[in-house]
Length: 86
Image (cartoon, rainbow, N blue to C red; front, top):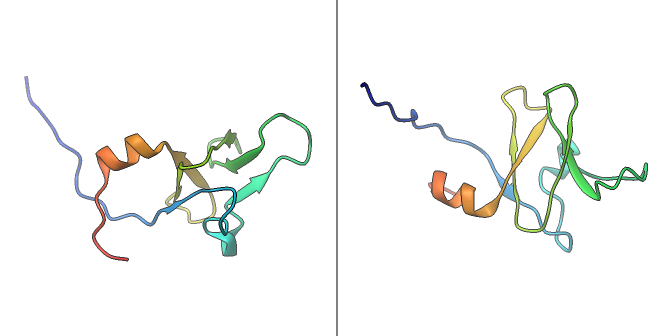
């Protein structure tokens, strides 16, 4: 059976903490649920506008369109990505 590995891809990412400036604030990436849906802090993904709740320590990454975002749990992020430049 053939084996494959992911191609190296360079991404932008910022970590979310409620008490710090919001990630990608210039693009309104992170929002707070003012509708009472029980989401708390969330990001809206490009997959049918799905809203995904986030927690402190989650990483926020832009989708390829640059307008939507998706969260990645800290442990998953650290296993998949390494810092190359600040």
